[in-house]
Length: 141
Image (cartoon, one colour):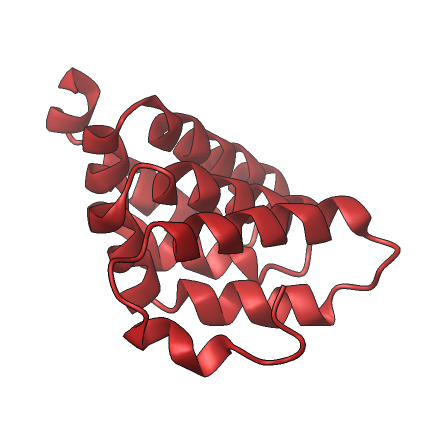
């Protein structure tokens, strides 16, 4: 919590914004975000409050390793409950996850699995079905 209070989520958001065109830097940043989000609900909430838009943008990255790491980070954050999951939903997380899942070929099974786990974590922790209704279709994971 001291890390969060000291501004680490905001700094990480800035780092991800600066490194989005550098695959190695973006991968490091998103892995740091997922690791921070996994600790507890307080840090996960601070992280999504500071940079959920940047976090969600990594899901659609053309590099499968960054996209997978972005999905993993979303799963880590969303698993802490409704407050975190709903912020991600309002930032378009579900649209990104479902779009990437449907675009990802079956040969990239690991990426598909990460996208599916993240989708389930967000759905499980939403407090209302309203924002999710547009995503229910035969192709929904």
